[in-house]
Image (cartoon, rainbow over all chains, first blue to last red; front, side):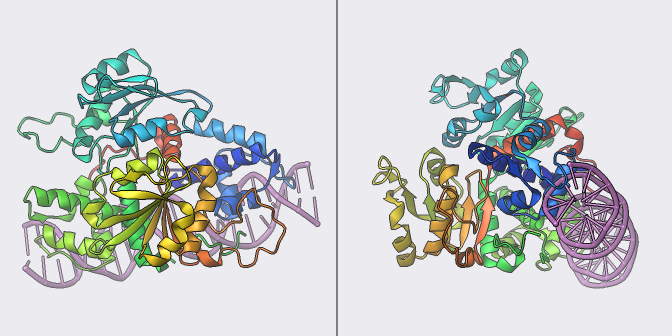
Length: 236
Length: 236
DNA sequence: GCGTGTGAAGCTCTTCACAGCT
DNA sequence: AGCTGTGAAGAGCTTCACACGC
């Protein structure tokens, strides 16, 4: 199914970041070996990852930083504007909204939503927090490309369903739960759950779960032999 | 090398979460099929993942929720106390420090560190923010099991190096950069980089990178066919 | 009969070696 | 000569089918 490995996409993001840093330092040329070292992967891997999307280098020469950067941005869809709503504007949601770097890639926060009366109406980063009941109309009246979900875990499934129903097709889920085309837990399950998940078709969910990260870290700290350490073996 | 797939550990964390929710609802029995459905994976996968660590079920019966929960906590190292320092106490670091759920697993924040004069000395969640120069002594005088790194990306490599030098053996890296046994960028590279990375041996790094998550989401929103959607095909 | 546990098959991803261009 | 691009080999992960125990 996946003719391009998911892990390859994560690595492309890393390469892009490295290219940006090289560009700020006015370094114009690089190579798969150089990128590999900076990214902590093998040079084979770099070349293979790039090869999924085209031929960006020159044999014998390497890569030209601005060109490869431009191409990776195009591949990743970062040369266009993305309108984003944030659902859940507590401490985490606000930290996300204010985190620098998102606007560098034309990610624009266009709406903030919450249920808390203390938050609705408040200004956060030039935007007024709206009640989540307004989400549906907002998504219909505005172009919304993706939504960030930063509500407490017990509300995540319902909030995600609301986003999908409203028409959001990409969700970055910060809540430590699995969201998806499931009947909402704690609801009477009697009536014919007709076509559950039909509106989830084509919806992309990416998870950013820091509690899970903590637990993985705990496990690997206890079992370090099960994880490849960041100490390089040899780049090629 | 990895006799247990990395992805399996992530899934175990998910199973554990589901078991906790079942327990709060007083559900005592479950099965690989049930867990699979809730976790969004196949039942084969659930059984295989559990089999890496033991035999926790009863044939023909399924699993007993409290037993499987206890066993998974033991496997993941969540039945012991973990002392955590947070390096970087800006908006993101504070959101992390205040995020509920960490203390449920005996993750205890024992020290907060930053360089900003505005933050050092301030109280955050019952702790006084210390200057990062105190990190080394702090780690030596206190038992510190892991560190969370939430500084701006340009400071991440140096801060990570400081943590490792101080003796921190597990790092949860929130900064959108690769950290590791590299010479700090922007430093004169002249003298013999003797044994770079020697002190990184055995250090575990887990990344929680939400900017990367945004970019992956952008890519998969543009190329949905390259990603398995959350819509289930059939659980078994 | 039912659901777990597991060796084996199948598939995806990574590593490799080298052909090909500059 | 040097470094990319890529088919092929190898490793690792997932899926499967079925034996086993309740």
